[in-house]
Amino acid sequence: MNSIPTPTVILLDIEGTTLPVSFVHKVLFPYARKALPDLIRDRANDPAVIAALEETRAQGPDREPLDQLMAWMDEDAKVGPLKALQGIAWADGYASGALIADLFPDVPPALRAWSEAGLTLAVYSSGSAPAQRLIYTHTTDGDLTPLFSAFLDLEMGGKKDVESYRQILAKMGWAASDVLFVSDVVAELDAAAAAGLRTCQMVRPEDGTIAGTVHPVAHSMKEVADLFSLPEPVGKAQ
Image 1: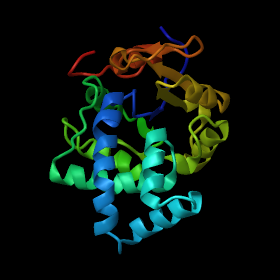
Image 2 (image 1 turned 60 degrees about the vertical axis):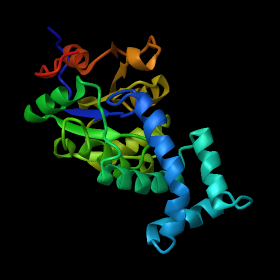
Image 3 (image 1 turned 45 degrees about the vertical axis):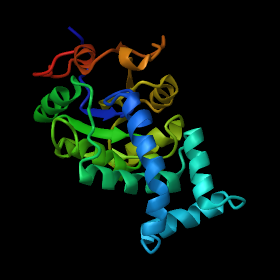
Image 4 (image 1 turned 90 degrees about the vertical axis):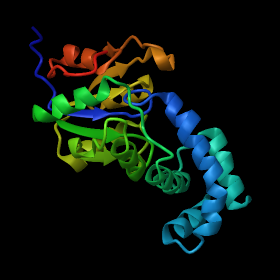
Protein backbone atom coordinates (compact mmCIF):
# COMPACT_ATOMS: atom_id res chain seq x y z
CA MET A 1 0.00 0.00 0.00
CA ASN A 2 1.29 3.44 -0.88
CA SER A 3 2.28 5.26 2.32
CA ILE A 4 2.56 8.62 0.57
CA PRO A 5 -0.48 10.82 1.37
CA THR A 6 -3.13 10.95 -1.34
CA PRO A 7 -3.26 14.28 -3.23
CA THR A 8 -6.24 16.44 -2.36
CA VAL A 9 -5.99 18.66 -5.45
CA ILE A 10 -5.85 17.32 -9.01
CA LEU A 11 -4.60 19.93 -11.50
CA LEU A 12 -5.17 18.83 -15.09
CA ASP A 13 -3.80 19.81 -18.45
CA ILE A 14 -6.31 19.46 -21.31
CA GLU A 15 -4.74 18.72 -24.69
CA GLY A 16 -3.20 15.25 -24.71
CA THR A 17 -4.37 14.61 -21.14
CA THR A 18 -8.16 14.77 -20.98
CA LEU A 19 -8.85 15.54 -24.66
CA PRO A 20 -7.17 14.15 -27.80
CA VAL A 21 -4.62 16.44 -29.42
CA SER A 22 -6.45 15.80 -32.69
CA PHE A 23 -9.56 17.59 -31.43
CA VAL A 24 -7.60 20.77 -30.85
CA HIS A 25 -5.51 20.67 -34.01
CA LYS A 26 -7.98 19.09 -36.44
CA VAL A 27 -11.26 20.52 -35.14
CA LEU A 28 -10.88 23.62 -32.95
CA PHE A 29 -8.00 25.36 -34.73
CA PRO A 30 -9.41 24.92 -38.28
CA TYR A 31 -12.82 26.09 -37.06
CA ALA A 32 -11.32 29.27 -35.60
CA ARG A 33 -9.19 29.91 -38.67
CA LYS A 34 -12.24 29.75 -40.91
CA ALA A 35 -14.38 31.85 -38.55
CA LEU A 36 -11.96 34.68 -37.70
CA PRO A 37 -12.32 36.85 -40.86
CA ASP A 38 -16.12 37.03 -40.52
CA LEU A 39 -15.89 37.42 -36.75
CA ILE A 40 -13.56 40.41 -37.03
CA ARG A 41 -15.80 42.01 -39.66
CA ASP A 42 -19.17 41.27 -38.08
CA ARG A 43 -18.18 42.15 -34.50
CA ALA A 44 -16.14 45.24 -35.19
CA ASN A 45 -17.93 47.07 -32.35
CA ASP A 46 -17.59 44.29 -29.78
CA PRO A 47 -15.33 45.56 -26.94
CA ALA A 48 -13.65 42.16 -26.58
CA VAL A 49 -12.83 42.05 -30.28
CA ILE A 50 -11.63 45.66 -30.28
CA ALA A 51 -9.33 44.97 -27.33
CA ALA A 52 -7.91 41.82 -28.92
CA LEU A 53 -7.25 43.59 -32.22
CA GLU A 54 -5.56 46.51 -30.46
CA GLU A 55 -3.27 44.07 -28.63
CA THR A 56 -2.59 42.26 -31.90
CA ARG A 57 -1.52 45.53 -33.53
CA ALA A 58 0.69 46.35 -30.57
CA GLN A 59 2.46 42.99 -30.74
CA GLY A 60 2.64 42.86 -34.54
CA PRO A 61 2.75 46.47 -35.73
CA ASP A 62 4.11 45.60 -39.18
CA ARG A 63 1.21 43.37 -40.20
CA GLU A 64 -2.51 43.63 -40.66
CA PRO A 65 -4.17 42.13 -37.57
CA LEU A 66 -5.78 39.25 -39.46
CA ASP A 67 -2.45 38.37 -41.11
CA GLN A 68 -0.74 38.44 -37.71
CA LEU A 69 -3.43 36.24 -36.18
CA MET A 70 -3.11 33.72 -39.00
CA ALA A 71 0.68 33.71 -38.60
CA TRP A 72 0.31 33.06 -34.87
CA MET A 73 -2.00 30.16 -35.63
CA ASP A 74 0.56 28.76 -38.07
CA GLU A 75 3.14 28.92 -35.26
CA ASP A 76 0.71 27.59 -32.61
CA ALA A 77 1.71 30.69 -30.64
CA LYS A 78 0.39 31.04 -27.09
CA VAL A 79 -0.57 34.73 -27.24
CA GLY A 80 -3.43 36.45 -25.45
CA PRO A 81 -5.26 38.23 -28.28
CA LEU A 82 -5.31 35.11 -30.47
CA LYS A 83 -6.60 32.99 -27.61
CA ALA A 84 -9.31 35.58 -26.87
CA LEU A 85 -10.57 35.66 -30.46
CA GLN A 86 -10.38 31.90 -30.83
CA GLY A 87 -12.46 31.64 -27.68
CA ILE A 88 -15.15 33.89 -29.13
CA ALA A 89 -15.23 31.84 -32.33
CA TRP A 90 -15.45 28.58 -30.40
CA ALA A 91 -18.24 29.91 -28.18
CA ASP A 92 -20.30 30.47 -31.32
CA GLY A 93 -19.45 26.98 -32.55
CA TYR A 94 -20.41 25.28 -29.31
CA ALA A 95 -23.62 27.33 -29.04
CA SER A 96 -24.66 26.30 -32.54
CA GLY A 97 -23.86 22.63 -31.94
CA ALA A 98 -21.13 22.65 -34.57
CA LEU A 99 -18.56 21.84 -31.87
CA ILE A 100 -18.72 19.26 -29.09
CA ALA A 101 -15.79 18.00 -27.04
CA ASP A 102 -15.19 14.25 -27.17
CA LEU A 103 -13.04 13.64 -24.09
CA PHE A 104 -11.05 10.46 -23.63
CA PRO A 105 -13.65 7.95 -22.34
CA ASP A 106 -11.79 7.33 -19.06
CA VAL A 107 -11.92 11.02 -18.10
CA PRO A 108 -15.56 11.77 -17.12
CA PRO A 109 -15.88 8.78 -14.74
CA ALA A 110 -12.62 9.76 -13.03
CA LEU A 111 -13.63 13.40 -12.68
CA ARG A 112 -16.96 12.42 -11.15
CA ALA A 113 -15.43 9.88 -8.78
CA TRP A 114 -12.77 12.30 -7.58
CA SER A 115 -15.20 15.17 -7.17
CA GLU A 116 -17.67 12.98 -5.26
CA ALA A 117 -14.81 11.91 -2.96
CA GLY A 118 -14.20 15.56 -2.07
CA LEU A 119 -11.04 16.13 -4.08
CA THR A 120 -10.50 19.57 -5.61
CA LEU A 121 -10.32 19.53 -9.42
CA ALA A 122 -8.80 22.34 -11.48
CA VAL A 123 -7.52 22.96 -14.98
CA TYR A 124 -4.30 24.65 -16.08
CA SER A 125 -4.05 25.06 -19.83
CA SER A 126 -2.60 27.46 -22.38
CA GLY A 127 -6.12 27.92 -23.74
CA SER A 128 -8.01 30.81 -22.16
CA ALA A 129 -10.15 30.10 -19.11
CA PRO A 130 -13.36 30.83 -21.08
CA ALA A 131 -12.24 28.40 -23.80
CA GLN A 132 -11.54 25.77 -21.15
CA ARG A 133 -15.04 26.24 -19.74
CA LEU A 134 -16.53 25.83 -23.21
CA ILE A 135 -14.79 22.48 -23.66
CA TYR A 136 -16.04 21.09 -20.35
CA THR A 137 -19.51 22.59 -20.76
CA HIS A 138 -20.09 21.01 -24.16
CA THR A 139 -18.88 17.42 -23.90
CA THR A 140 -20.38 14.18 -25.15
CA ASP A 141 -20.88 13.40 -21.43
CA GLY A 142 -22.71 16.65 -20.73
CA ASP A 143 -21.67 19.69 -18.71
CA LEU A 144 -18.73 18.80 -16.46
CA THR A 145 -17.85 22.34 -15.32
CA PRO A 146 -19.57 21.93 -11.90
CA LEU A 147 -16.88 19.36 -11.04
CA PHE A 148 -14.10 21.97 -11.24
CA SER A 149 -13.05 24.61 -8.74
CA ALA A 150 -10.82 26.65 -11.05
CA PHE A 151 -9.87 27.19 -14.68
CA LEU A 152 -6.35 28.62 -14.87
CA ASP A 153 -4.66 29.92 -18.02
CA LEU A 154 -1.63 31.88 -19.18
CA GLU A 155 -2.48 34.70 -16.80
CA MET A 156 -0.63 32.49 -14.32
CA GLY A 157 2.39 32.48 -16.66
CA GLY A 158 3.82 29.98 -19.14
CA LYS A 159 3.33 26.31 -18.37
CA LYS A 160 7.05 25.55 -18.58
CA ASP A 161 7.91 28.29 -16.06
CA VAL A 162 8.42 27.28 -12.42
CA GLU A 163 7.11 30.64 -11.22
CA SER A 164 3.73 29.94 -12.85
CA TYR A 165 3.11 27.05 -10.50
CA ARG A 166 4.15 29.11 -7.50
CA GLN A 167 1.68 31.75 -8.67
CA ILE A 168 -1.07 29.13 -8.86
CA LEU A 169 -0.32 27.90 -5.35
CA ALA A 170 -0.43 31.45 -4.01
CA LYS A 171 -3.64 32.34 -5.85
CA MET A 172 -5.49 29.19 -4.83
CA GLY A 173 -4.06 28.82 -1.33
CA TRP A 174 -2.91 25.25 -1.97
CA ALA A 175 0.05 23.51 -0.36
CA ALA A 176 2.37 22.24 -3.09
CA SER A 177 2.57 18.74 -1.62
CA ASP A 178 -1.24 18.40 -1.82
CA VAL A 179 -1.37 19.07 -5.56
CA LEU A 180 -0.98 16.47 -8.30
CA PHE A 181 -0.37 17.98 -11.75
CA VAL A 182 -1.18 15.69 -14.68
CA SER A 183 0.12 16.65 -18.13
CA ASP A 184 1.50 14.97 -21.23
CA VAL A 185 4.41 17.45 -21.51
CA VAL A 186 7.59 16.63 -19.59
CA ALA A 187 8.84 20.24 -19.51
CA GLU A 188 5.61 21.34 -17.82
CA LEU A 189 5.94 18.56 -15.27
CA ASP A 190 9.56 19.52 -14.64
CA ALA A 191 8.48 23.08 -13.84
CA ALA A 192 5.65 21.91 -11.59
CA ALA A 193 7.94 19.53 -9.72
CA ALA A 194 10.48 22.30 -9.20
CA ALA A 195 7.70 24.28 -7.48
CA GLY A 196 7.02 21.31 -5.19
CA LEU A 197 3.95 19.84 -6.89
CA ARG A 198 3.52 16.13 -7.38
CA THR A 199 3.46 15.10 -11.02
CA CYS A 200 2.25 12.44 -13.41
CA GLN A 201 2.82 12.23 -17.14
CA MET A 202 -0.19 11.19 -19.19
CA VAL A 203 0.98 9.12 -22.14
CA ARG A 204 -1.88 8.58 -24.56
CA PRO A 205 -1.16 6.00 -27.32
CA GLU A 206 -3.70 7.81 -29.52
CA ASP A 207 -1.56 10.95 -29.43
CA GLY A 208 1.81 9.23 -29.83
CA THR A 209 3.07 10.76 -26.57
CA ILE A 210 6.61 9.77 -25.64
CA ALA A 211 7.07 8.69 -22.04
CA GLY A 212 9.77 10.47 -20.06
CA THR A 213 11.93 8.89 -17.39
CA VAL A 214 11.60 11.33 -14.46
CA HIS A 215 7.88 11.48 -13.64
CA PRO A 216 5.40 8.67 -12.93
CA VAL A 217 3.66 7.64 -16.15
CA ALA A 218 -0.01 6.77 -16.66
CA HIS A 219 -1.92 5.84 -19.81
CA SER A 220 -5.39 6.59 -18.41
CA MET A 221 -7.05 8.28 -15.46
CA LYS A 222 -7.56 4.86 -13.89
CA GLU A 223 -3.80 4.39 -13.88
CA VAL A 224 -3.43 7.84 -12.29
CA ALA A 225 -5.86 6.69 -9.60
CA ASP A 226 -3.88 3.50 -9.05
CA LEU A 227 -0.53 5.32 -8.85
CA PHE A 228 -1.69 7.93 -6.34
CA SER A 229 -4.29 5.97 -4.32
CA LEU A 230 -7.16 8.05 -5.69
CA PRO A 231 -10.79 6.85 -5.78
CA GLU A 232 -11.34 4.36 -8.58
CA PRO A 233 -13.36 5.68 -11.56
CA VAL A 234 -16.63 3.83 -12.19
CA GLY A 235 -18.00 3.62 -15.70
CA LYS A 236 -16.20 3.70 -19.03
CA ALA A 237 -12.95 1.83 -18.47
CA GLN A 238 -9.47 2.38 -19.82
